[in-house]
Amino acid sequence: MSVTIYHNPDCGTSRNTLAMIRNAGIEPVVIEYLKTPPSSHELLELVRRMGVPLRSVMRRKGTPFDELGLGDPAVDDAALLAAIDHHPILINRPIVVTRRGAALCRPSEVILDLLDAPQRTDFIKEDGDRVVIADRLSLADLGELEAALMDAGLPAGDIASLTGSFYRFAKPLGQTVGYGGLQATGEDALLRSLVVLPAFRGQGFGKAVVLTLERIAATASHTTLHVLTISAEGLFTKLGYRAGPRESAPSAIAATSAFRDLCPASAIYLKKSVRTSW
Image (tube, rainbow, N blue to C red; front, side, top):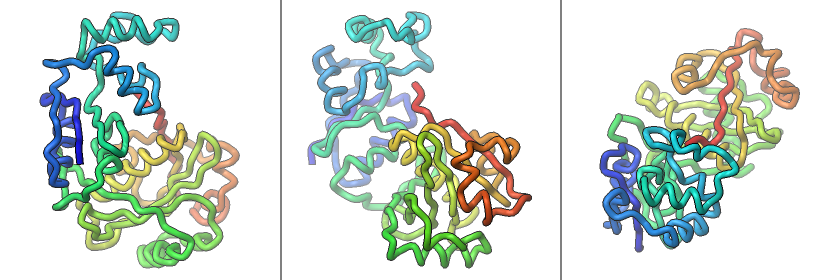
């Protein structure tokens, strides 16, 4: 499989992505774009393949983006390309191209959707974060989610009648570590039915599951995630969720069975924006 990565070796996300490509047994073409920047034509072809606007592959943090006024919607692609030509650091990283497509791999797990080959070993990022793979559950599989929730003493009474997207989460070599899902209501989505299996608790898999669900939600154009939790407030707070009064939840979220019936009044309500950022 031919893989090209536009790489910055000083970036942890880029290093993790490159390591996951190699962990699949693939040696990619590595382009250190700060040394060999893509031409304007090549960059436009990349964003065309990605199906995104040019501005979405530009980096704001640690670059002259704001100094140059590039956040102004009136700045057109020609001006953006001219700025990138002078300041290649404005290109976000890493961008990866395979026969499956092209994508900005932030977070680095995005690479898993672009590779034909599986990971050869379980993967842990440089900072110790876990990597999990999401497998969407069919209606016939919801029973295993219900059983896992009941074993953990978590609400499961409405699983059989739910509409939404529910997932089994596994280590790269296939060992199931937990479950979780999303109930979507337009731009909002309820993060629910999260459970990590007993053998994998306390090892960072809860964080990996939540971050993977955030990526799924953002890809589906949900902009705000909501959650009710009895015992995991600390995890969600560390991941940027903010607690608020339960009655402040949007009406569609408040109308879900989790809010109405399942979660006790003592459950903490939190929310987080998952809008794409530079």
